[in-house]
Structures are given as C-alpha cells and as structure tokens.
Image 1 (cartoon, rainbow, N blue to C red):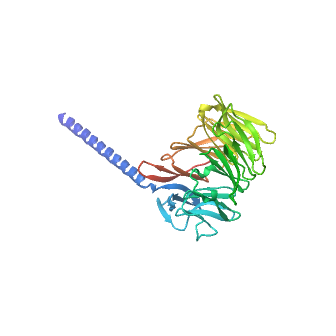
Image 2 (image 1 turned 30 degrees about the vertical axis):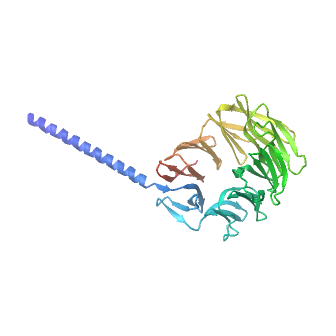
Image 3 (image 1 turned 180 degrees about the horizontal axis):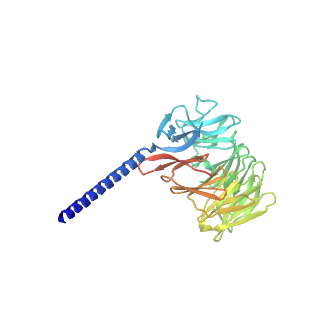
Length: 384
C-alpha cells in the first residue's frame, strides 16, 4: 500500500515538473515569436510624409531623402531618381531636392534655393528663403521678389500672405503694425494700406474679407481692390465672439462661426442681398475644430461633429482627435484607433500605435507610429 502511494506521489511530481517545463517552453516560445514580430517591423527615421507613385509607397524626410517601402521584404530602399512632388500645374510639376525647389521644365537649375517655407496657390506659388519672399506665377513662368526682397522680419509665416484677383495682387497682414498691405505682385507697388486684419481672399476676383478692428473684429467687410473706395460692410459683430474667422464659401457667400453667450452658431452672409442665415450648433465650451474639404463643411464638438453645406447640415454622434474626408468616407482618429464612416455605417480598427504621419488612398491606411525609441511604418487595409 505504501509502495503504491509512493508511486502515485512520484507520478504527480513528474506530471507537475513536465507541466512547468511545458509552460516555460510555451512562454519562451511566445516571447520568441513576439520578439520576431517586433524585429519584423520596418524602422523609419525623420519621416515628414508618405506618398504613392505607380502603385509603390514612398516615405520622405525633411532633408529630402526618399525611401521606397517594401512591405513584403519588410525593408526600405533609398531612391536617387525620385523626388518629393510638391504641386502639379498643367504639364509641369514642382519638386524638392536638397532643400531646393525645382520645376520639371528646368531640372538643371533650382527655381529657388534654401527654401524655409513654401505655399502653392491656384495661380501662384510663394516661397520664403533666407527671410526673403518670392512669388512665382505659373502661367507667366516668372519669379518675382515680394516686398522688394527686403528682409521682412514681421512675416513669420506665409499664411500672413493672401493671393487675390488671379494672383495679380497679394495681401499681407502686418501683425506688428496691425494693418493690411495690398501690393501688385509684378510691380510690387502698394495699392492699399489700411488698419485692420484680412481674413480671406477671393482667388478669382480682386477682393478680400477684412475687419477694421484688429482683435475684437467688431465688423466684417469686403474690400474691392479695383475700386477707389471699395469697402462694403456686411455684418456687425460687436455682440458676438468670432470662433472661426470669415471665409469665402463661394463668390457670393461668406461664412464664419461665432458665439452669442454660451451658444455657437454658423453664419452665412449673402453678399448680393445682405441676407444672413444663422444655424445653431451647440455650446461654445464644447466646440472643438473646423475644416472645409471640397466645399464640405466639417465642424467638430466634444460629443459630435456636423457636416454638410450651405443648404443643409447633418451630424454624427462620434468624437475624434483628428478627422479627414476622402473617397466619400470620413476617417476619424482616436489615439491608436481609426474609424471609417460611409453611408452612415461605421467600421473601427485598432492600430499598432498612435499615428504621427499618415496617408490614406484606395482603401489602405499607411501610418507611422513610435514606441518611444524608434519610428515604424505599417499599413492597414480597410474600407467598405
């Protein structure tokens, strides 16, 4: 009897030892697989953008280095003959190499060297280089100094410059002197100088929206550069706070977002008859952000977002950190999660990390994330 008990005890001990050994092996194998999975990630460095060309995916860095991403082999291949395409105009395109901007019509000589900032508009490109400003008219294929090439220290960003009248004029907000300067782009002659701030410019007609008061925006007016006294007052805003500055919706309609007390409103002004349409949105404290994509207005609040146009606004009870609209789909980011909304249907995906750079095209979401030590690129196939 004692012998049987001893045998049973030995058997139990053996089983326990084998179980522990199998568990340890399983744990080691799990760690090994996780390590292999981590080692299989594609490391990228200093990436500032992602783009596609001929069905291949590329990443580019601020210093102009471009790498093709091979997702099958899990590696990068540096490219010498591909450049960052910045903007297309008819049959020409602009690209960057070694911090210089070139145009495809002349690949030997840079259009502008040592570029600090650039901005491509419908009829003209703007460049900032060594604190000097330049404009390049696509149709004329000519580059012009802006502000007589003086070092305009008060121009902190090219966003202070608005182009209007098919880029015949440029409008500058001088933040230091709190005034507006309007110059002819080819001659650089000053056409207007007035107190106030310019909000937006009409790309086709030589007009811009402004306020004569610099901070409180007590009025909204439109200035017609071609008229001697071209200012037309559109609205008085002394009792409201401007949240989104006035912009052109089209040639006839101007819109902005403001608040009366605790409530937020979207306002449309018809310039032809001075009619004002006002839509109540929600509480001012819940307002988040605003963007317009191809005439689609998107207004975010802490508990929902609105989307639509001048005729009708819809809303969706969904929050986000960032939002985009492409291929008739809303792409919402929340930390390391992405939601796709199309035709009132939602699909949600979890990413390997919070995107710091991303690119979406044709049902594939490419993104770069970090683990605190390295940056990685990955992709997610999604869509409806």
